[in-house]
Length: 301
Image (cartoon, rainbow, N blue to C red; front, side):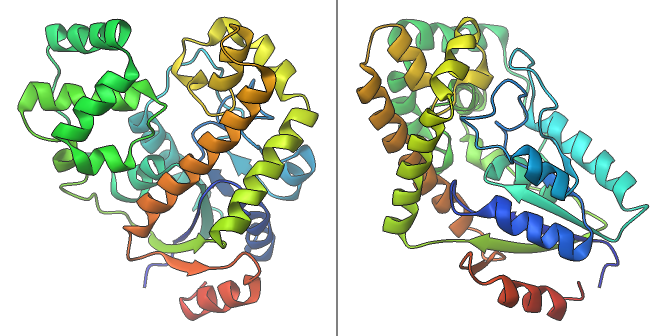
């Protein structure tokens, strides 16, 4: 059994990962690496449900507020930085925690990324032209036809992810899903995967309440200050895209808020679809703290 252990805590948005992560971090004196790809951005706090300042003081966190919204950031860069950080952290401790809901980023840390083919510039320009002239829905329809497996998992509000799947297919005539993790990288630490889940109706109600709380906490003002950055990929995020459309006059504020709730529920559903495909994840309720600790103890943590 590997001496170094990485506890991986996953689950859909609003399920209760932050609270559980901090309790485990305090119990094992372990640092937390965030794998929430939107909590990286320091200007996006309310709409990404970052840990509060008090929660950040309760446990050491990494990969929160480490980027600006106009920074371009890739999964490959995250993989390299996370592994480098773990190398350093494991000099001081045998346990670290990776926590979040961005499955692709978690997968990169655990298994690495495959070498992807180079994309011809003409293909890249054509895909981007299709996005501009025909819209994201057009590209989503194409992706569903050429790579239904990736279509089921992709963040459908993130044009960059959608574009990537189409570029790969147009370049190689092979689905993007065939390239992902064909050869897993060997890691020197042992991974222990824990998933949190709730009854669907309970989760959806928590999502609705969270959105209302975000609006009361000033989400509208936060998005208003970021309007000029709407074209950056960081802003292609539930809660931000809908309010940007409100500021453009395309929705009323009430319509935008209801869309945020609906799109967040849909995002949570896609997250669960992704994580349920991983048979190594052991599922618990958020109230199962003692059971989780026993499960970890049985695995040498």
